[in-house]
Length: 210
Image (cartoon, rainbow, N blue to C red; front, side, top):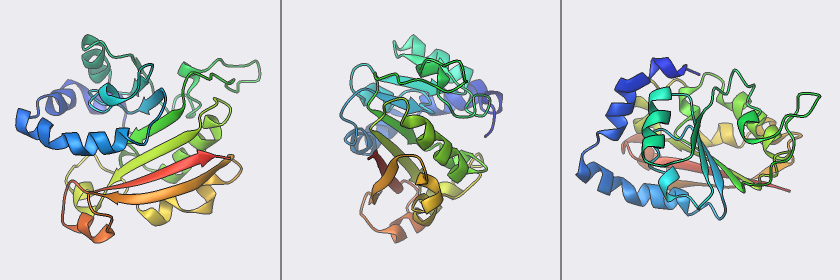
């Protein structure tokens, strides 16, 4: 995963500086993602907080770009700097570490959402498996993943790995985690082929704890 300084202030300004028309156009996508979330959530890789603002009260953002962390805090959002690789994806900033190094049950959060983050990583399947392994002990009920289609993946140089449905459905993702893949769907229009040509097409996968 790129470190925060690979994005920095320039990346934050690019996200935050979208035109009013573009921000209005994004609302259906943000509402659709937020619709999967029922209780307080952890928004991992929250960027400038566009989705976090729409999540239930008590939700928290985690972000590796310090400039984006400061931007979100200035808007009154609860966001903490977080480097997943340095933490081995244990989400220790939202749980209490026990003596053996594991993270104890937190109980404040219902869902972990990771929207447009996995495609920035070199080994997304391994990272997702680690997060699912962590999510159970933290008391999380659901993990929601959102990734772009092929056209969206090609649209940014910071994207490293194209994440497709086959990868998210791999048994290795959920093995020994206590989670199962509950659903996958595409938006807008539940057809994979739309994402081959439409930049703003997304794939969503929901994992739930047994």
